[in-house]
Image 1 (cartoon, chains in turn red, orange):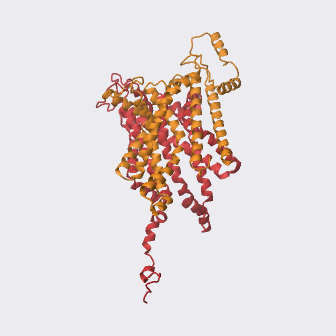
Image 2 (cartoon, rainbow over the protein chains, first blue to last red):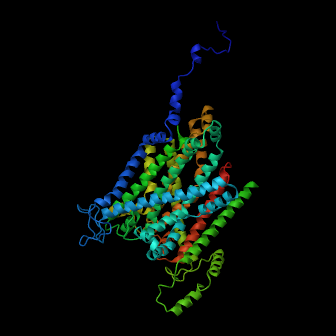
Image 3 (cartoon, each protein chain N blue to C red):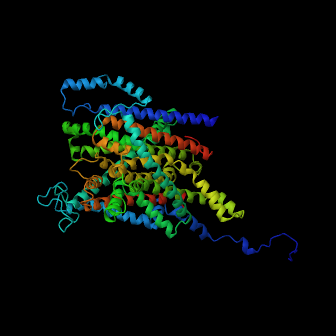
Length: 333
Length: 306
């Protein structure tokens, strides 16, 4: 048929209305439907070079902190007579401190304590925050309002100050409690200072987590895709596994990961104030702040623990960043 | 009207928070056994006399009410250990003037370095400069303040003799300011970068481009303006981080500011002074948070307080 030159009709060939290649759709949905949430996240994480490098550094640091002290001929509180204040040498690669303690093994133990502070406080925060936030979000109503007002108040208070104050106050009673009451005696090994740090973090840092969990619960309760999935016949199990958890757990894990470096950072600050872990126990924070006293005459004492603590916080920060990007499906391109 | 109501509620929350922190600190500090005169070589009679003089022999709730009354009038009691008998209010106001001078300069550095650098990194996402900025800012928020301070001292003062370690000499405030500004600058860089990236994905920018607006206007007038809004909320935490940075920077460089007082008070267990500085800091941070919440509301009417 000949086309009228003035006509606005578009010329359509048979080719133009052929069905699209199926592969195009498959390519689009590959990440979400068939591969599964964890695999897709892992794939995204693996693509992030910085995060992967950070992950290997973290693994190396964990090995250094946990296996390292077992391989060392010295103990972290062992005072070697006659080798006080040594410079780094073959027998003591990091040198010794003024009491003749090997600094390499002290750094390893310190890294262990710092990592423990980070991980355990993150777990405490996750537990308290999740329970509080979930109750608040699920029950709702007046209880929710009251619980969230409490959170508002704690949130608006500068936490670092209260952390210092609470730490100051509970240190002595806690030590006494562990000395006198049989039940708490096993805790002596960990030390009152460390337990006090956990209590302090547990009492202050859960607020942020509880807000996130509550927000997620409220949001997920109302989501259209949840209704849609239910309408399509999805059971409770499928709903939780395929819809609620993937949308919520990413943010939870990312927040928990971010909690770790901030806890280590705060412990270093407490050590600087002289209220960190108790001697002879060492954390990287206490090692660095001890070294600050003789920073001009013996700078090497500062360098190693300072490098380690910076490396730990840095790699956790970078890994946490990558993890958040990988786990948050909404950021997907 | 709605705005005024919300504002009122926000102010009430701030006042209530302050009240809570005053109460908590007061009772926590009073849980500590003993009194400030324990360490003194004094007979029990003299100690009892001292306790009576400062009203420490009265029941705790009487002391609490009196402390609250004093606070309203700007009286925080006296220091017992560090500067015997001196009013805490006078220590706080005098030393805070020093801290503020330092803090404001650090804040300015943070804002005028952090935001532009963050913008550059965001606009050139994925380029070499972006990678460089990201690594640098990640290091900046990861290294504890006193490590930065020590590194600066060892390199700039000991090795090259460029800057004096003592705060009183000319140029002595440079290193404290760098230490103070490091964390907030790097945090601002990351915040600005993330904010820019988010805005760049918005539909209205695509609309503007499709309308034929020049890239310059799209970026500098529309994108930047909107991406800077969330940064206002960081004003409160920014003050807080400069304060905590102040604890470290002032102690290391021996600056006679409130931060150093707080650290020495903690180390010497001068409980009234700790209490006073804590409450003062808390009031300041709560006030800054309030200000930036309200500012945020004014700048971005879409945001609801709470």
